[in-house]
Length: 471
Image (cartoon, rainbow, N blue to C red; front, side, top):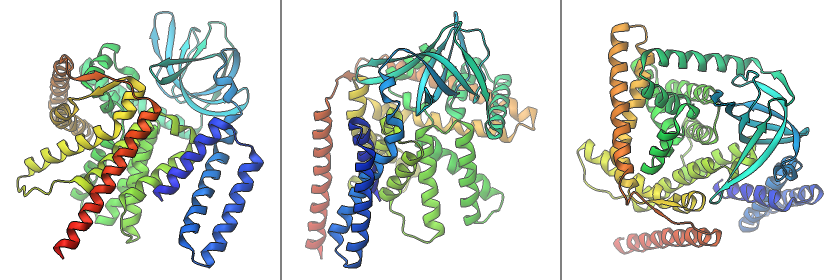
């Protein structure tokens, strides 16, 4: 399954870069599928797998084709018509409103990517509503990262197309939760909780974003695998207290995770993590052996079926490689230390996880941001327990919202925890050796991952030889 995901992703990249003809891609997919069926009957496994890879490559090229029609407009700053869906709460800044949106169409051609919108009109914009607007789309690059900004003048055309019933309800839930947190938390804690719990990163101040970037913990602001993992554990614990059976807890926790993913806007990293959790649950319910690599590949495949342009999303790349790094790291380089103490085991797992993730994402952070964070191991060892505590106490706020006395106590704990978290983060960011400036080229990235694959393969060969010697 993982090889099929890689093939599908490769097909998407090839289809986007070279704009492969529809007839060629469809013909290749049909021919490979027919040959797959033929070789399956004669049980020729190597050729069978190769043809399946060809099929998924051609399928990826087909899947990206509708989006390539709007590709020429991405490099043009002429005034065009856009249909967009607002994905953040607008923030007033001087003479303009700033918000984030997902472009659905450009001049009636399909698109599906995120932009920042600088809106100089005085019209109201509502979260999760869809609008038809006229403006200029401009591309900006910082290091090797590419960003799009849509500029709307004060006299630009705008038409509200509304929203569906689900989006209306999700918008109401978001507003009510934000209002609730705003009433009981201090400003700093409110902005932090709005970001890490509801995905409202637009509430974080610019100085705070710079602080997190210097400390190398910006990934904590983006709701991803770490958040989903903590949320799933917490939900499982609550459902256990309610006396529900194990299988029932699995199903309910999965449904609640999808609801949570919808509420925060279904960002790529969150959706991938939720899908991966669901594949684990499904494998368990069907009594199938869980293969972590294949589960990751399946979640990636489903995510790219949902939106093929996510393969170019930095957050998706970082999230995917982080999980892959941890899976391969713990499978091949886990230290089986005789630790009976839960705290020592927790510290060991945090250290190893941070090492594996850091090694896996060094090329990506270096390529896009020109930085390699060398103190991230110690940073995560200190701050992740704080972060976990803050996230859990946020759930406790919702659970004990019926009791004003308990609610006030928990809210004060959250306020103080966030204050301490920010102070420690600021202190870490002042260290001169917290990161080094280094930008890796695409060829360097290929060589890096090739070498890393060689190390893992060598380790596996060595382990097999040792096991044979012991036998």
